[in-house]
Image (cartoon, rainbow, N blue to C red; front, side, top):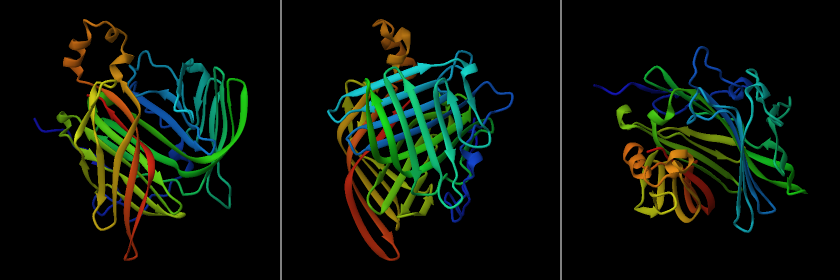
Length: 356
């Protein structure tokens, strides 16, 4: 039996955008799927703050891995402190306490709220207010680049399942305050915000994905490398965006990807590539070399029955070794622009999620 057709909605020619899609407020709004119980949606924000903290926030209408009949809206908060410690908060809320506009980003989950404003003479400003336990974020993300999405923003799997992605803030100046354990600090930094939506059982669609981005004074680059399950032909989607100063100069899904030798991690109970090379020939080449595993997680730890030692081998045989990694890596990026080749180096964070 042939694999279901997969359609990436690039503007073309080929798997790239000679013309960028104009991103409107509705693209970062809610995308309900009429008549479907398999719809999922979340809004994501992160910021690398000048005081050394890295903070992450999700507002979830439904996480794609949760069963639709029992799923509830939720909020996730991650704090990576300058001393290397990590704090994670996950709180579910009633469906009656969650709303999302279909006109623009305006999402409420319990006491938490994300919304956007659109100045007539400038780029969007995204507001994030999260408050759970003894942690509160009150932040404003001032876009330094236009919002972006690859093509029309959606990938269609077999005519029934869909996955959507819009990057509301590819690069943003962040200001505001964070409160942790009763201490409030005014903060500044650099941030990012995106939004995913779709319908279907993504655990049966996606095998794994890499996701990350990097910045220097002039360049911004972000990518998502998604591989489907074998039953969908192990198809690989490879959207990549490159911007120079305030302009997006490349939007492509035609990257070549090479993974380095695999390194086993006991915490996640699976391996990850020691390095990752991403290249759009003649335009940009990026080498990410892992220096530290900031966060490793065996995703079966989230399954209650997996806590019983006798069941763990059976689960591994049935579903594989799903795992999550957040890496701290050095990067070397070479860009060819207007006939001139430039090389930039630095450090960045990036992720690998493997569902099998």
